[in-house]
Length: 245
Image 1: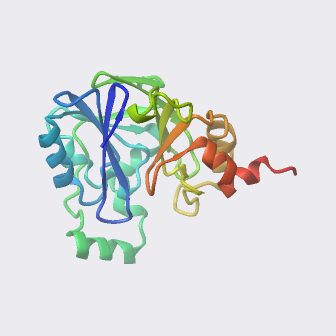
Image 2: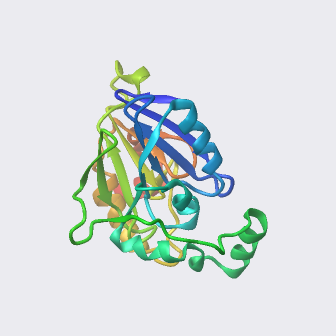
């Protein structure tokens, strides 16, 4: 468990594709946000909700790929809304449709599929007309949203203006960004799937990711956490953008 100043952060790893699902809350016994509930995480998430006495206020989706939204509907019970960028909203209608037939068969056989797929009752579109602005006020938290297309049309990153308690006396990190599949430790999200765009990804890396301060803690959609200082120095996709042309 990591505590980000006034923010409690807990993560679970999905049963397929290694997707990181994050729970964010001001403290135990409060409302919380669930970010990117992937395949097979429902019981893990519910166990942590019970352990920490947390009440879901919203589910935030960094993008609409199946491995990030598989469990969104069962976790959006009652009045809990799912937040997704307007340009990825269409993916919630049928997340399986963008997968190859072979992958669909594998998922149906191993995880009992989602032939009964149903969208959440409440979906809030980020970045669309009438939607919320770039700052969300949910569960007692202020979360920034930044559109960073390339992996998908509607990929976003979520930001928190705080750092882990154990690092509060260090200058190593000062803010936190949940990067989804835009940026990983040592890599980036692929752009060869439907809706991916290498040119858009390069713009997002250059205009959205590279300007992040070195003191940014990065919590990605897959793999370990990192820092912007580390990625700026060693991530080949970022160093290539900074190399002379």
